[in-house]
Image 1 (tube, rainbow, N blue to C red):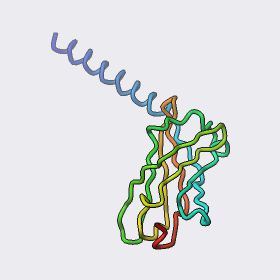
Image 2: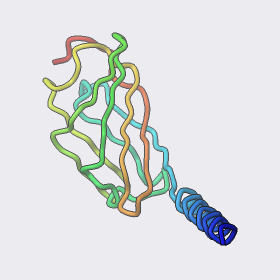
Image 3: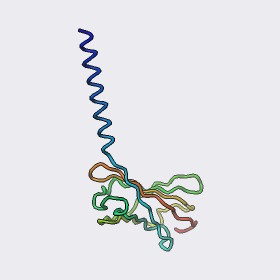
Image 4: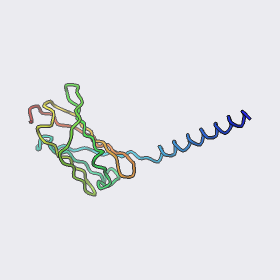
Length: 132
C-alpha cells in the first residue's frame, strides 16, 4: 500500500514538473534597442517593437519599468508621465524634474505583453549632469 502512494506521489510530481517546464518554455523574451535622443535631454525614450518581433499595442502599460544606471553607482527607477504605444513603437515621456541629476550612461525598459511574454529595451542613457 505504501508503495502505491509513493508511486502515485512520484508520478504526480513528474507531471507537475513537466507542466511547469512546458509553461516556462512557452514564454518568450523579446529584446529591443532603446533610443534616448540627446537633444531632448532624456525626457523621451522610445524603441522599435517591430524590429524586436512584437507589436507595441500588445504592451501592458502598467507593467513598464524604466531604469537608469547612474555613474554614482545608484539605480534609478523612473516613472514616465506618459506612455504612448503604436503598432511599431513604444514611447515614454518623463518630466525633466523627475530625472536623476547625475549622468546615467545606461538605461533599460522592461515590461510584459498581453500574452504573458516579456520584453527588454536597453541602450545608452543620458550622459550630462544638471539637465533638470
